Length: 481
Length: 147
Image (cartoon, rainbow over all chains, first blue to last red; front, side, top):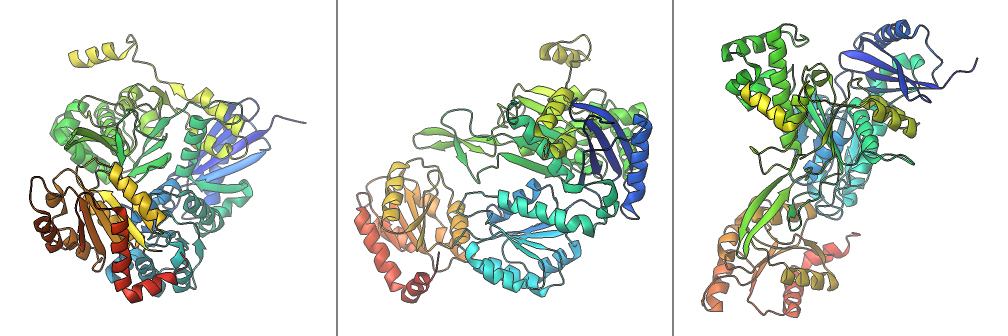
């Protein structure tokens, strides 16, 4: 019997293995399944459990045309980056790693000291990205660092993306390790070229890391692990923004993903100044940019969210006393797997996710400032101008399970209290309720049209709370509450 | 190829002269890293470190150059650029201070050359040729550089 082609999209997450079964022609979700991520023992156990769960929903598993996976299991793709000047090649290397979906566990600049090298070895990254110097520029520091790493006990693959004139000698210092040479992340001063490094990291991930982490033990159940999960979310965001042959996308957009350990923000937009006469400064920004806030995790570092926002502000937002908030924070710290159950816990989580999204988006978006010159004031922009981004998409459990996801996503918008921040002014707000962005990112690699239409059909416009139809009445309600 | 970093220092937006200078230097066979207007002193240094520059050429047109350039040589030394060639030029001070006084002030700050208003581009190129020539061994080394 001939049936419609279907796809199975797998996310080997840090805690759960999640499945989405897609009817490709019908652009619809057939069913979902979930099991534990049993990567420390045998990943096939959790995968079988997830498939069993899916089968219960579907009645019978179809013969999937594609079975594609992403992974953030076993600690994600742990990376260390090394560059020369902190704001230049070290920053370019950082952006390349984040753009590849890595979890950055260390970033280093200038000459590595013995202590730095020891620290890198103890961090035990899956991949190290070594940059430094523009092409034809400084080669002394990258050679020093390559030699220092070459003498060390570090054995992970090294992606070499620095001064090309130094790459032969640097590779020689690293003999005995897998060295992947690619184009410089900063070939010319202030010119960013992170795509080759990103592609190299992704290739090492597919060829080596998937095996090293034991994910390929479940190989019978899937065709390929294509990328780290954050990269799949990013691919989904890119597809939704840019569209594909024959189907228009939504244009410039922002994705916010508050998670248990970090809050991620992705933007797909050129970020050029939207106002004439504004002078951009600093390193050029990647059009597709991901930032990861390691201090803004809903569970693993709820306390630092409170630190950066203020206990009183969080307590006021949650409608709890500061003492009660502290008590609940302690409970979260004791058990980071804990999901909110009581009314107080739900209220605190809402306040936490609002604060995390607000901080993370403030850090992701650029700012303007005024400098006073001899001929009058001039406006300077650092970072991306996302004020014109037309869409903000929320994804991740903390948002999906929020009772008022609209209030959370409104934290991503331009506001009068931070007038110099270039956050989106009047975007539409969409919710990835069915956790499909990663799945669309994966499916987009083989069936872009189907993936895009699936995303567009399932990203859900967030309505105002019942009885309120626009911003003003919403404000009125909160101010009289 | 010798690498030169150019830019207009501080809160100074006068970019036209600096751009013409940068184009002329490029035409004269130098690799120019043009940072443009409104460039903080630290950014000259960072660019020079990353590109392994041979000289930094600072422009200042709005009269506050002395304030902006204070400690520039020290910043270079701090960043490991001990031997880098430093030029400064433009309307370096406000008022009618005689040029030799102004020049001495900037040379004392650690600049190798200071150029008064009206300095011709040909003069600057001559200075560069002479100063790089004086650093003999360095010039031979850079000719062997495939970049």
